[in-house]
Amino acid sequence: MSAPHWLRQRERSNRFWISTIAWIALHLGRPVAHALLYPISAYFLAFSGTARRASRAYLERVLGRPVRLTQLFRHYHTFAQTILDRLFVYAGRGSMFKLEVEGFELLERFIADRQACLLVGAHFGSVDLLRTLAKVSKGLSIRALMYPENASRIMSIFRRINPELSGGIIALGRPQTFIDVAEFLEQGGCVALLGDRSMRDEKRIACPFFGSPAWFPEAPARLARLFRVPLVMFACLHRGDAEYAVRFELLADFRTEPHPTNAEVVQRYAQRLEELCREAPYNWFNFYDFWDRQA
Image 1 (tube, one colour):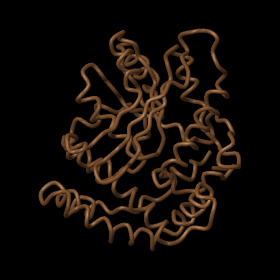
Image 2: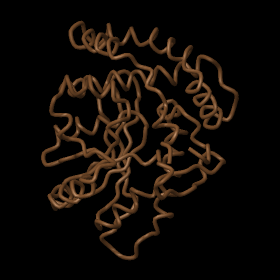
Image 3: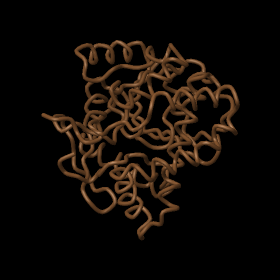
Image 4: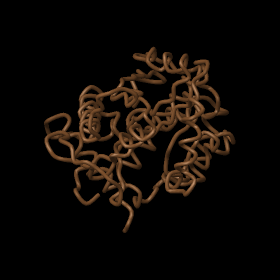
């Protein structure tokens, strides 16, 4: 079976230019790199027709009205800012970010009890701010469960900047994946994954999302149930230049009875994601037809 559209989508970034911008950011400073995001965003807005149409379709749903070119640009530019912020996170400069954190006491209790958990996020804001929290919060150990093939050019630059990056990733789609997840959870770690993209050959659930059904993977709920660990939703909302609001919320605790069904958990996740998108509409970065029933 062929891969879904989001995994087949061609990565438009050029490794040379990514490396150049990374060098500028790390050597000439954030203000210079930030200024470059304007022409970069304009370029991608002009030449990425499929992503532009998807951005328009999403923004018209979340805003409830036709959108202007300036709003499409803002969507692209917000995404570009989060990519730049990822660069500084991987370069070990997380102290430059202003973080407003809500609900972290939930994880602090798990850390104190050496309780493992699953963290489920979305392609929303900058999930990499979790790495900054992990560094400043004693005892918080996180590994990301992800497809290494996705955005491979950008990830290769990040690995060059931070060679330890691969050690923080559990690769999906490998024979060893399940064992790695089990071993890390057994050690009391937190495994983070994203719950807003699915593969057609995996179990998924259609949930109401901005007035139409959309597919969401069942995997986060299934894994949390299988390993009998809490499932915590997190989001890192981009608020402005180097400013984020980080949220944590318990979706389900599979250590206790009665358990919600997987469908109930996934629908709750979809509902909360829709609420987050309404709060910060330019933070959601799925630049493809999310409501395509065949995606």
